[in-house]
Each structure stands twice: as C-alpha cells, then as structure tokens.
Length: 95
Image 1: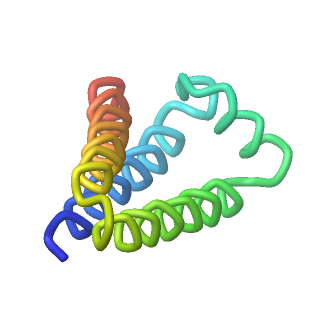
Image 2: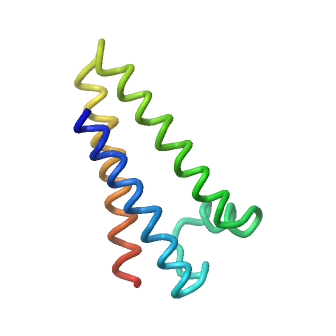
C-alpha cells in the first residue's frame, strides 16, 4: 500500500507542478514533446486525464505483480516514483 501511495504522490506532484509551470510560463516551458502535443491538440484537461489513467494503470500493474513477482513490482514502482519526481522537480526548477 505504501509503495503505491509513493507512486501516486510523485505522479500527482508532477501533474500539479506541470499545471503551475504552464500557468506561469506557458506550454513552451514544458520539455516533454508528447505532453506538449497532447495539450496543444486536446487541452490541459486531456493531459490531466492521461496522467491519472496512466497512474491507475501502473498502480494496478504494481498490485498484480506484487503477488507473484514482488521484485519486479518494486522495480516498476521505483521507476514510476523516479519518473514523477524527476518531472516534478524539473518543473519546479523552471517555476
């Protein structure tokens, strides 16, 4: 349970800092070209929905893997926490 909370916290930190970044500096400040394209084509709501769907998918994957492959589940979780933390901190450095 705690690993999934860490995953969710890191990913939500990334999302919230992204929204602050775009609010203060515009979409040009975002470094991820996939996120820029998604926001340009469909709006910031689509970015938030995509982030939450991806978070749910990864959290479910970790939960399923934890039963039979706990080390792999830990690795997937750590990768998700690292990705969210890196994204959030890079956004905060720009803000």
